Image (tube, rainbow, N blue to C red; front, side, top):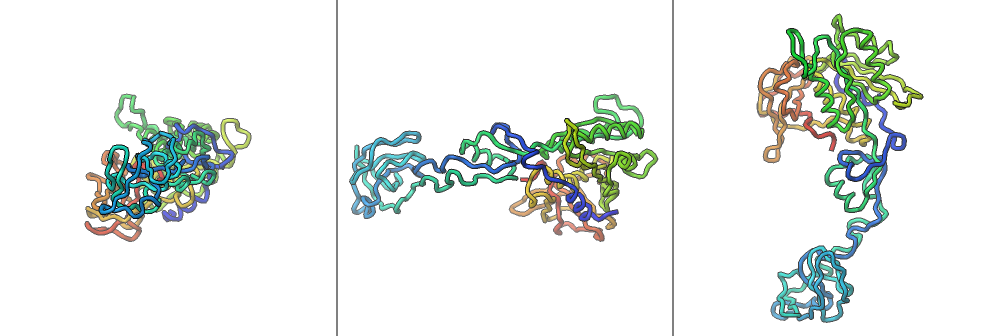
Length: 425
């Protein structure tokens, strides 16, 4: 069995990131949420687009009002009202001012805004009761961003803030990495779909649904291949069909040492090089990781190697293996930068006693929460058997107990792998 960190390192070394030229596509801004930039973005607009007011008040010349006070107010003529969206028509001359509102363009001649709380309106004049700071409350053109400079860099995943920036910058066509394609298949004679009547001895295949949802949340495209029976010919055919059109293949079941566990043998027959057969982790010890060589000349596929993960059949083990080992590979493959490939561990206070046999790196599932500025981990109730899928619902963190440690007391610090719905932001 390989140590967990060594297995992670092997997997990341096997993954080739998507190519920014060969594996990119142009999409509309409206479809960009969650996508990853494959080319830097620039804008032809300055931010702000023009000098504008940061406050409701009066646009003035600082030279006219620098000595204003309540004892000696400065009286200015009002020559124009300037609401947001209006282009000023007047130039502010000595002794003049304009009523201006937040976001409105500064008029020619004015260089400062006096907030309305420091003024007194008198018909078509205004009294300035307090001297402002020079250029106070003026947002100058290009002070946030200058047209033509880099706006967003390659490798950025587009969430709400980035979409807002792109929309404001009128960047409506974006070059992004294509989504990684992940083939998913479940193996086992005992499996049935959720839509079939359940007979004695049968098990509903939840894995393909869980993994398809997980791949989607990670920004990939799941290619569900369905249930494959424990017959070598059927399994070989299913894997061979999955490889050409996928970046990765995830299979569940058939990777242990039982009489019907054929996956490793079939992978070798199909030309894959097996790099990992088991990992010192609980749950999820039977983990096969293999690499298929590039498939040249396949019109439906691409010329890159295909990474294969043979995951345990137990539902909890399958998901834990995805969170711990497949997710870093997905992140690297998707085009995210290096600093965002590895799993995110957070130090948290355990609100429960956590136990392990100490022989393998162990993961216990539950909820990771931020409470009054500190992270806390609450262990899910009920059995922590790898076959118990029920208490996995609402999992947002996996508490990690290192090899050689058997107990973490309530109130002690534990490292927690953050999982939840967040891909990598």
